[in-house]
Image (cartoon, rainbow, N blue to C red):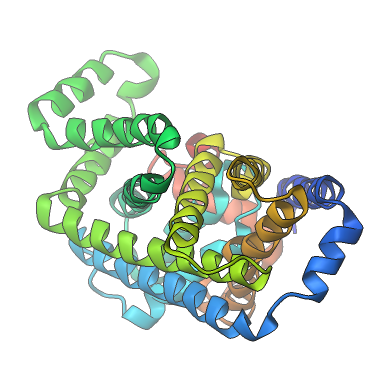
Length: 342
């Protein structure tokens, strides 16, 4: 493993450790230990199943997006492994875990990264919109939180609208041709725009958004079961709170650009839970438990995928020590290196 990748991973894991310790002390170590000891662990299979369902259906959507941009020479099973494998580097700065999928698609299907990059960009935008919609539904029980939801939803929809108004988008691209640094990338930026435009056309947009609503509602229900496991009384309001808290936490974590949303996600989720009356201990414990499933479970699955299918992903000449060089050299062809994307 190169020193550059070691450094990136080191930063992510160090931040994860600091956030974990901070939550432990904030919620009181003894109280958290007591809450976990008395947790209704019989609910664990349900929480795990809902999280797995989230990953699987998002992987199916990823395959659908690949088909929409012309990458048809890849099976659903292979695309699922590419999608899940990307989680292995979720804790690296610069979104390496997401853009490494472009390298794998180039190795497996000879797919141009400039053509496939929108599958990642649109995936994030659609998930953001889905979570904003779910947050607005969850906010029905907490109307004081509506302004935050409205701002996030407005920002995401503005981007979608600009992309769909072709004259406006093309005008912006033409302006870019006059900029020295941007002009040499215009060929790739136009390919990026065309693929993004296709993925955000009405049919693809509705399919992607529909799947996003289903998977993140399921993950919100998983969080609801976490709260039940910690002793909360079942109610519709509690489910709405769980969906709202998870959605807003994920959105703010994504906007923070921190590895895995670490720190921003945990802080916002804990604050929201406390704002509605939960104790520091319960809020911190609930956040720790659901973050294991929404972050660490994905990282573990991703690492197992890379270990088991590393030759398929990286090619027969695979050497993990060459990872940085492989990503940089192959993605540089499209001017879409993970360093630039970060």
